[in-house]
Image (cartoon, rainbow, N blue to C red; front, side, top):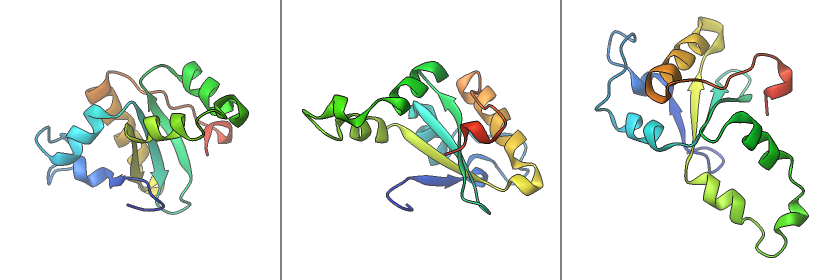
Amino acid sequence: MRDGKDIVSIAAFFGKDYIEPNPTWPAMAKLKAANIVFGVDMTSEREFLVYEGYGRQTFERFANMVESEFDQEPGVLEISLARRVLYIEIDQEVGALEQLLALMQTVKGRDDYQSGDDQTR
């Protein structure tokens, strides 16, 4: 846990061969339950969206909403989403991004990654 975020290493999803995901490992249950998955580069600590269960457009709409829309109950959206958000730490310098995207394809059926600085947090 870092800054209140549940951050899991990409290695937690794979066996010793680092090729085939291990479906019985505890990290896999977290991934299957997650509605939103961010990658986190371990060197720069930059976060980037790799999966959004409701579709990228819905995520971007929520991300761009003005906080005043939630004045009646501030933080409700953040709290409800936080329970289903997973951060997966990778090392982009050794090609782990491709491994993460393949993991999303295998477990979630797709990925929502877009390359470029416009989608990093």
